[in-house]
Image (cartoon, rainbow, N blue to C red; front, side):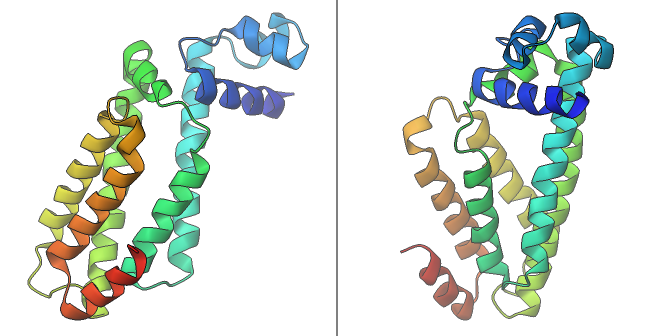
Length: 195
């Protein structure tokens, strides 16, 4: 039953937002009493914390699976983007905003983990690209990883405002990031992915 609660609540939270979904809604969707939900999760905040941790883990497991396929560094970035787009295509953008507003401690803890893991992945990608001759050797790995994270993070923060253009902006950000450090060989590889 615990897994069913998590599965149903995850879908509802991502679709409708953390604020809008109540424990009554989850119980109703599962055709169980609210008491059953509270047996496994004594409060909504505990459920939200567990679900955000599960989503975070799933995202990074998917990224690890892509990295394990040993694409070149540029193709790897485009593959990661595709997986993110697929995972979150039915997700309303407001859950992140609501998480930040309603559960700031959960949001802050999640953000700290995300910053650390994303920057680590970006650094590994840049190192890989340098080794493959796709990125210049004189690139400051630390700075470029931070620049790209800041760019992507700010786009995601503005997601509500740019909803209709978000996919286009995301591709442009990836292109901008790649061109900034690409060798001529890297530019040729990039051109294959932005058509």
